[in-house]
Length: 141
Image (cartoon, rainbow, N blue to C red; front, top):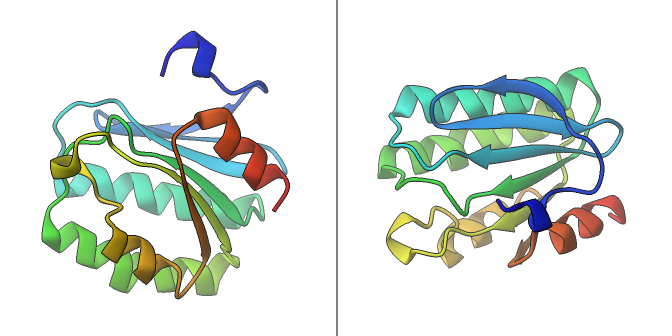
């Protein structure tokens, strides 16, 4: 993310590991983003578990998932996300909206059309190309 693409408000840091970070804008949304470093299942799942904890703790309902620097995800992790993490998170937190910035490389793109369609069974999802447009959509959701 370049300086011109940064969020206009100050985000609060919540959790980070070698793969990415979970931050948030109080009373608005969780901001999940990736560092571009290689990752394993433990790191990916830790980020998503912390995102769920943050949604629950601060009664947030939205995630801005910035996957532009996300490394490739295994099929097992993708299935875990869709079949375990997502339904459990919706049930626990009321998670309802997801703004997605896809990775530019289709080989590293977790949010394929198939994944987005699966997410839409649980939450309102919209795919964006610009960070600020995605953030504004969530603010108005």
